[in-house]
Length: 436
Image (tube, rainbow, N blue to C red):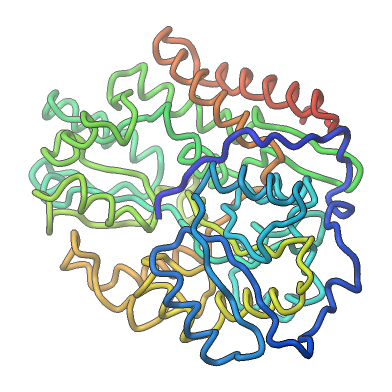
């Protein structure tokens, strides 16, 4: 599933200092049980296709805990609706939250601390995935789906031009230069100033840590050394003219991908679905490889996209809601259904081997080892702690990198702009913050 960026949350915050203090509710509400009047009834806000069919299985097996699904919105709009419902005192018991949106829900007291209920599930997820729902040492959701990054490339055109699949980013740069020399009408790939989540995944692979929280204050380091390395790398390729500088997900990009004037795409596990939609003429021509490494032999990659299942801090049935979230994201039948009905790539390790993932993607019918390879890649995926104002950082990314491309200025300067904008916004909102 392609990631959807979060918007500015109108939080009404004065000074939210401690993540651990933002769970809301009380112990008595977390221990609420079935009443004599009937089963516990939970509400779940999600956007996953056919999620109601998955939930129906739970309802059939658990007559004492019944879950109803609502799809009021997705991405940005859903975050706003959840915040509004929380403020009004009637939020859903559970909500699907993208990883970069989860800190907004935590710092606004929307997402409950469910640590006591989910500790046994830790082994069900790769460490890098489990960390995506962890803040201040506490767990605020269950990972649902993930988007580990990898490289898609046109194997037919690589063969035509005698190109070798790059294993490192240095090799990637050399491949980009070689292609331009052999055919000036083609580029290896493009740098997108419109997709901050893409850049964030690349930065995480390099070891970036844009936000961190030590229990007393936030540290913001969007301009850290790892991020600058990634920015200067891509800025250099754009300045050299060996990588295109047009954004992704535009009619022009779609045409280039379909016609083969772009030969590769650093993307995520959901990439084949996108390729099927935008480049139907290329069926059978794509292959996948691990994302190029900064150091030869390093198998680390980043995430682009993914979401979690969070429990509302104001839910009167936190324990039961968490039981459902655990089932949804770890039970074998539920994981199989999330793939077949919802079309997502499960976060749980067991879910990445369900029978439904035994078939190659439609756009890559010969890639019978696609999902086994993805599972191995997923074990090495890493993210970083997201901050409470990702929306501001993402908006600044789009403006700053677009301006850097237009003006021909260093991309590392765009990171400085992002850093200043993000720190200023957090300071204005009342967060104790320091620059990294």
